[in-house]
Structures are given as C-alpha cells and as structure tokens.
Length: 126
Image (cartoon, rainbow, N blue to C red; front, side):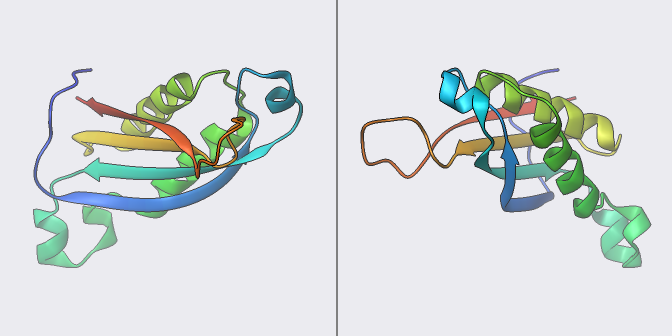
C-alpha cells in the first residue's frame, strides 16, 4: 500500500472512544485504558449523492465497529503497530475505500508531565 496523499470525498469519524490494553510499560499491559480514534476514509460518493441510498456508499457504522474490534480484541505494545493494523483492517472492510487515515490517541499516557494525550497518525491508500 502506498503512502500517497488522497483527495476528494471522505467519511470522517471523530473521537471514537474505545478501551484496550496497549503499551510498553507493565502497568499499561495489566489493565485496559481509554483510547480515542479519528478515522478519515476516502471514497467516491457520487452514486450515493445521486441515489440517497446507503448501499451506494461505505457505512461509517461498519468502519467504527471494525476499529473498535481491533482496539479491544488484541494488545499491541506500540501505538504505531495499533494504528497500522487499524488502517489495514479498515481498507479490507470495503473495496470502495480509496484510502484511510487513522489517528490513535492514548488519553492517559504514562508521563510525569501535564499532557492531554499522545498519539500517532497513519495514512494508507490502495
């Protein structure tokens, strides 16, 4: 998959909250913690715009469920690995997707500083 820059119509899911067990430190591996996901999915919406029919577009509910399942059902040490797996799983969900961008934020990062979140963003395209 390439790392090119997509353009055009897109579906956006912002701040999807999911609980999972991800991290390097022992305390992160022992208990679930909250994560926030942003998903941007590029898809041609011309037919859906003309027909006003859900079958002509990608269902954002299905995308959100796939993302939630990936976060909650397997543990990753690195956010980079989790974000890459999310992007790959989303592209498999519907062949009409041209590209996806996934942002994963750890809402309770183990830092001795006042920080709202830490995260990574990946972009995958066909």
